[in-house]
Image 1 (cartoon, rainbow, N blue to C red):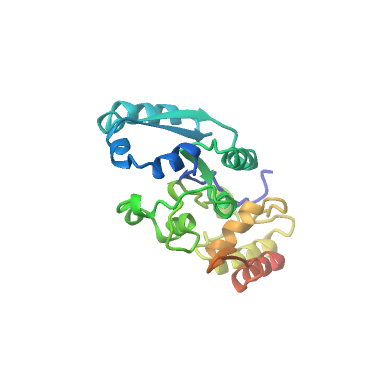
Image 2: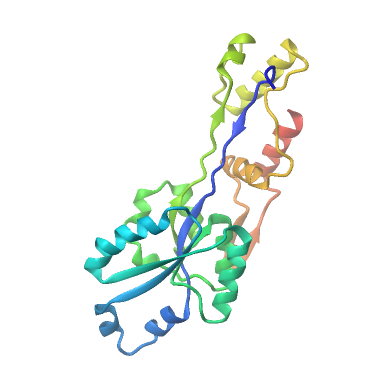
Length: 243
């Protein structure tokens, strides 16, 4: 619509590479010939949906992987809940892959079903290479590490510069300024909205809540804690309800 201001929060699929507890991995851990097994060639299976990941793996197999005698085979999969179901089914059958690409929101389900290994002792200084909030998603608030971040879902602010100039609006840099800008626009152009808010995109709301400090899934001892009605989440809901 040419006469409408639009603001979009763009969220890309966020994922991490996790180590699944497959039959091969468990057998190696339980072998009395661990040292011998670790010194020989290793073949790993990697389930992923990302386009071009086979090319990335080829570079590994020809470079560091070849030197370390670690060969990775890519198996293209569907994403989302379909992949989670397949991973859990394969895990229960003792045929899980060695590596899987999983969206961050899938990690609690995979961990609670004992489908992922704790790789805290094997990630070196990887933590220092990521923002704390990103790394926390791979630990679920524990001392364990269940995955290494592969990408993140940035939330970005887009606006029509020409329309901002037309209505004499200043680009907001805080949520408070955003709300003020929306009210100012309504006074100048009652039939024009600054933005739209998706009522069926749970990922958008989750991202906004997390930005405000919400932690929907945490752990306490050996129990999961779910809190989707905390102060931060209510703050986000109230903000958009009043907008």
